[in-house]
Length: 158
Image (cartoon, rainbow, N blue to C red; front, side, top):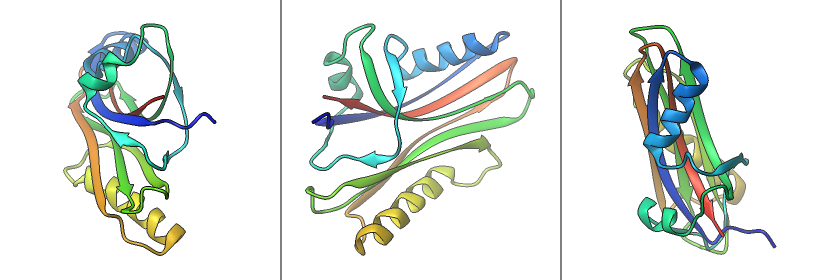
């Protein structure tokens, strides 16, 4: 079975006159530019260990196909603020899966990370009838200059 054993969370931002380059710079800021990233849907695997980014990066190799739940937003509207957020809701019973949610868009000052957490918690509660033991988020906000991209990601390690 292809079930991740570990996960780390990261976020980044990048700006450039070229949209694609701004995305690359956001991935660099997040530390995950050297992988072939494959976006997956939003399940936190059962018995998955949350690790730090440095520990996770040590287990991955340049060019490796890496699965992740990623939120991404790009804009060229100078002066506007944008965000990307991944929220998590983890059950106390590690044999159950949890939920991850991705939100992105224009930032207007609201607590977008909290919204992502609350949505993940709602999914967990309605799936299993339980409250999460833990919720958290990783969020990046940036003011747009040229093209600006923000990313937030839960990166899986096998």
